[in-house]
Image (cartoon, rainbow, N blue to C red; front, side, top):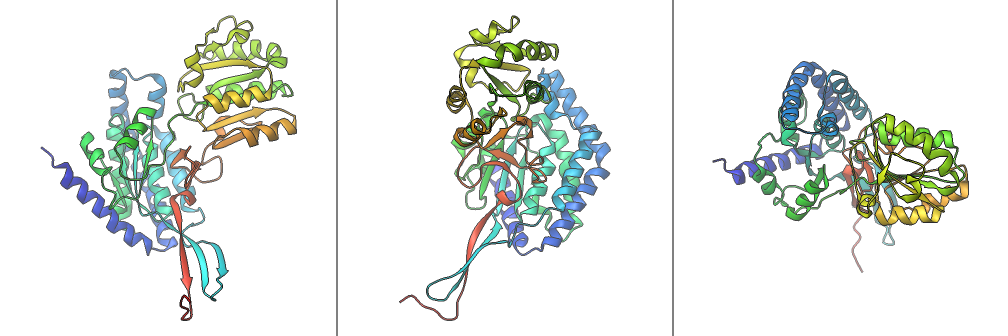
Length: 419
């Protein structure tokens, strides 16, 4: 039997030692290492695709739904997209050492707040093996060591990506242990790591609500999380209906199995009769199952009846809840009551209504005349993201390199003492 306590101790200690080296590494060293990782991903593209094919075959045999198969897929175009993402991360401004504030204290001391790495990050995620490379690169950009534990459904793909990343680091000026991909299928490994608050500084789970709650319940280490992505689009009475149709269709259909896909559509009663029949027909043609309240069902004859539980649901599938509302106030109340504080959008030409929505909806991202699918680190110019946080402490929304740092106070004196 594997001694998981010994194994996790070795992993965590190696990561802590690597984090110490990373703290004194240069921005140029980290840039070169990330660029080398991108090149290694390209060089290993055939091996990664072959490993992914094995995982996909096993997932199909296990009966995983199409939305989860899409998350798992890492074919040649997506591998190249991962490599391009790493190229972009390599060129991002380095956050480490950036002075956030400087002042002179009453005693004459020089006081600065400076961005520094968090230290060691444990990332636990399901499916989406592209996360392995992107998370590794973002952590390195911010000077952190990272332990990466992907889901068993992507075991072969994650291992192949991990080999490529390790190969690149072994040829760099950074320690190979700065990125460790954990391939053991044993659940006990994760449980042991979550107790190692002496070596690991932050846990970021990325996956379904059950995974995230399990991590939070077990962890002695701070956890950044979002439980669900119950995202809304509200079409206001003053909306451009052609724009609204395009935004709503994109938010639901473009990639339904991700956390920033629209799960519920709210439509003002004044425009519901003009929008819903045509939008509903288009959504049904795309394979979307509609679940609607009474007023929406009168305009959507093929829709099922939405239950009270539907309004709280994150479907991650081609399923959409539809509700007719009488005002922006009602839409805002509904979102703040049933939403998950992830990403919510309004479509309107009324600037005052838009301003109220953007101010009053309590979500990590609020969007005006744009699809919720744009709530993403890459789309926000962060290069990539390690996840989307719906917490309000430390980081909120898409998390890029800046969000993987904290600040320390640096004080320089000339002999001052406290009177």
